[in-house]
Length: 516
Ligand code: NAP
Image (cartoon, rainbow, N blue to C red; front, side, top):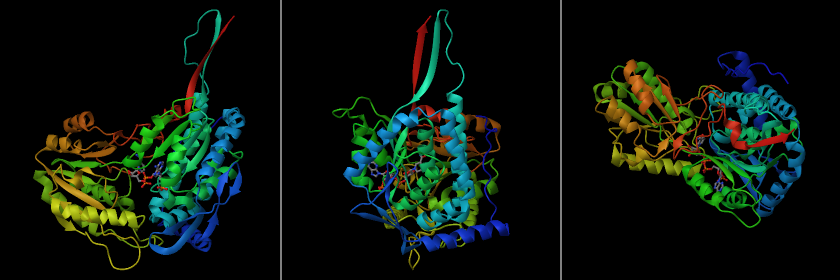
């Protein structure tokens, strides 16, 4: 199988009337589908449940996006059994055929990118550009992993020895759980799932309950691309009910998780336990939260830094693991930069993201809203509230973009992931102090450094301890295949999605020697 060289899928420009109209049409079509029922998918069968999860539009919480069968304990058993039943056939399917499924799925996402973007607008409140960028990222992930699977299946990587035919090959692990978050419901669900699949594994997918409808659309696309029954099984359900049983189950071979630190640590501990009948140690990847810093020194291009601080902090309402929720600014330019950042933040247009002019939508649900508003109260005691800080009147989980100034590095709003539109601006004595502050949390996901001084940039590259470091650019917007993504310390196990080695997690190496 010969695939053309990988190149990233371009984002669409919604200033172009045809793109705008196509997205409007997809939103209208999605509006007509709101409130539909969706079953579980187990072994290719559509399965109902006694309980439902209702996914709602965070901009209009009375509007139901989808009603989903909520998986119960017996469904965990059934889904794992269906996966193991499909595994012998799928794992022995030639890698070229498995890669071809991903390439076909990528093509389907290209054709249906507006449809997928529209689901995200309604289900998680993504503004248009963000939603479209995410659909493009899903295409990149599948195209990248298809090529990677072919690469791992070819080539000699061991030394020959006379008198023996030797072989080293990668084989899949088995059936694993993919547990995904709601904030990148298309890209992250696609990335973890399709990497596992193309490596020859079968998957039980447990998406976040606030993004079930998006997951149901994706599973449909993979089925349409040619996945046999049982290779992908969809368990929409509450993590609090089915999460532990799925992780604990002796038939679960691996767990690929992206989500909060709290749930990730819990999975790590539980997956380490060996249960009766379990014949392996579970492999676990955990990509968790961030408290990312954008550092600015006095030599930096301040206009550019201010623009990128505002984008990093408030893009998708600050609900990105890569969000730049701390701006650490050298004292000499602190007041000037803060004023420039505030100017940028005031330009943000908050509202219902079905409107293409809206650049900031609602936060995902009432629990998120409550948590963020609580942190804003904490922030009022820890710094000076210089912008926002309130929830506007009316329906929807909207919170104004909020900026605190004069925040110290030990403050809770500088240490804990808020996961909302709240920026802590923090003064530093000089660039070294700024880097020390940037490194002062338990996380280590992304970070940015703005400077025009090559020596300081070299120093920052050595010292800022994060999985994804960006110089003179925003802390968000990693491109798959280009910026392998994953964090250090409490941000995760650094498996580097979209990187050259990501598939290794989902495979085991087998060495075969035949004496002549
Ligand atoms: P979350 O609350 O940890 O949920 C993530 C997933 O875990 C959901 O599917 C959830 O199901 C499930 N879950 C809940 N309890 C579980 C349990 N006991 N066992 C197994 N699974 C369980 O995270 P989130 O709110 O969806 O996502 C936001 C978090 O993800 C942030 O911390 C963000 O930084 C992080 N994130 C990290 C990355 C990265 O690459 N490092 C990327 C994106 C997001 P329910 O929804 O049903 O509870």
